[in-house]
Length: 329
Image (cartoon, rainbow, N blue to C red; front, top):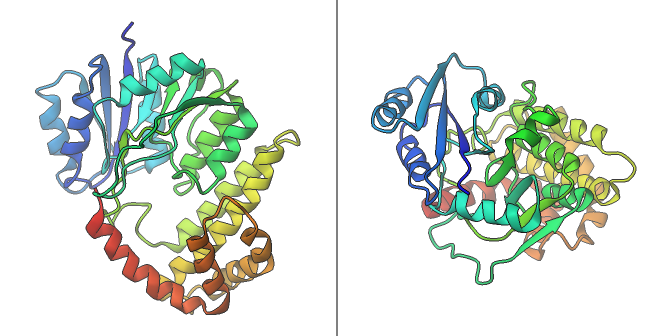
């Protein structure tokens, strides 16, 4: 069995990274794949570089759209997909050659419609997990894991049955441009009869593209990300006990990161009301968060500092940002 796997790659102004991204998918050990690159109105050479690869590999299709945002781009890819499976890769990231092979093995072992890795390569010094495991989680546990700080937020590093995606009409919310991935995957986890989990690293998540949607500061992202959490919260029913509890922690950490980003960008006086809302939020619930086993002690120390002297967090963040970029894969 070698089922067709569709890869959807939304791409906007990633000329520096797009070739490595596409080629990492082309070089999969399981070659029965199709690659749909959605060029979202790029103004650099992303379009030309992607189309050049498509001329030498019929598995690659480039769709050129006016700029609509990442959610619309991924939705376009879902509509065009023909595979049994579908995966999403951001245009500035890349994957290991056994991504498909391992993820399908996880699905076969667990019987899951949705599979994910809990870890990824972020820095040059990152090593493969010493002991690889595969397990299955039911909906509440899987959703809680996705909301926890133990995994990176995003729809990438995952594999979905396309029939499952279409059966439940799962699509990315086009009103969201930040937190849209978390909204999508927590919807999927709630509909899944189980989710296949592995800790094997098969995805390379870059930390040095400071112009990407997730790295570049924007107050609209903070506002939109909070809206995404409201969407997730409104969908959790009373049976999702662990997920509701983890969403509370996620909101706390979101507020902490909002404070950190506003301090780092030195825009506290510009966005005073938003800043005050989030600093007040973390100060009200910090004691409860400090008791959470999901947060490591180093992160707890940063939170404590933010509550006492928030401006220091901005200084630390600016320094760490450059360090992360220098060490990035």
